Length: 114
Length: 115
Image (cartoon, each protein chain N blue to C red):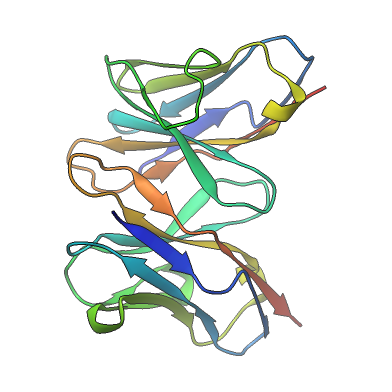
């Protein structure tokens, strides 16, 4: 079965410093992986997705993630944090087999300090 | 890009009443709709998956008679919380996926408060 583990429930960075949000996945085959962002009381916005093409995926708002099969990781990074990046981030894997449902990680709350 | 409109954005209802939440795909045909529930400071939990014209498939532990899902058209799905109780208070989010559209578009969510 597919699953994702977000290693940090909270991450705090200073504005202008790099962001690293960690995610490890478990899958019996090549997975489809996503990162979504959720601002308070809002829906989810897709940041980027990996679907077995290039292992380095560039997303919106300067975010990118690298798929590393050897480490079963899909960490999200951004070179320089902005105040508007403060939000909840979810690492997500698509379910396998006949199902196309998404399986969510527990989320990482990113705080950006001025 | 693909847009999903979810209404209402928030609703307060009395215990014992029913509440309907709508989710519409505005510019694509949503062959599959997903309904999620999110408790404060927690992740999204999938409640059910519905394909247009078919009965919804509920996740384990979700009461299908309490959370009625209708997906009668390719652009509209509804979730009705029947006989709501305070423990049903939560944030409900829909997500739509269409044919040939490998992505998932989320609605903006509905904050339900049962008093």
